[in-house]
Amino acid sequence: MTAYEKTCLIRGDGGRAVRAVLDRIGDTWSLLVVATLDGERLRFSELQQRVSGISQRMLTRTVRQLERDGLVSRTSYGEVPPRVEYELTPLGRTLLGPAVALAEWAVAHNRDVDASRASYDER
Image: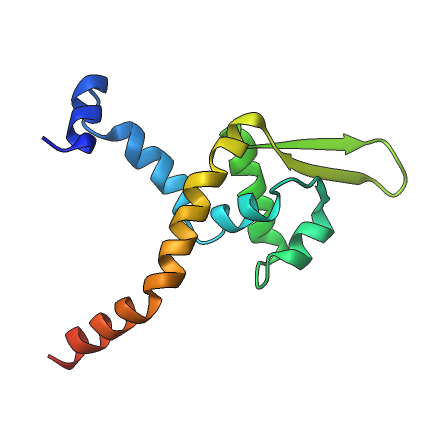
């Protein structure tokens, strides 16, 4: 029995918890936002500048979802103009280790994956 199977059997949810978390962090932007907030509190505009290619709409959706999941906190200041800052919660910081490991794996094996895709597509 694999560790994954054992975890799912213990929880009795058939992997639902794992799928729910992977759906959140496996989207296009969530891990990039989490990694960008590592050790920093950033304003929305700063966060958007640092996450290359993300639109304002998508960043808004992503930080709202991460806030809902308890990974990011949002602090709004009653100033003119309004100021909003985002930072990782303690729960969000626990995601950094696995996120960095996954990112490092992706970088290290990118060429292998590309070669496999090319080989598959040629068949």
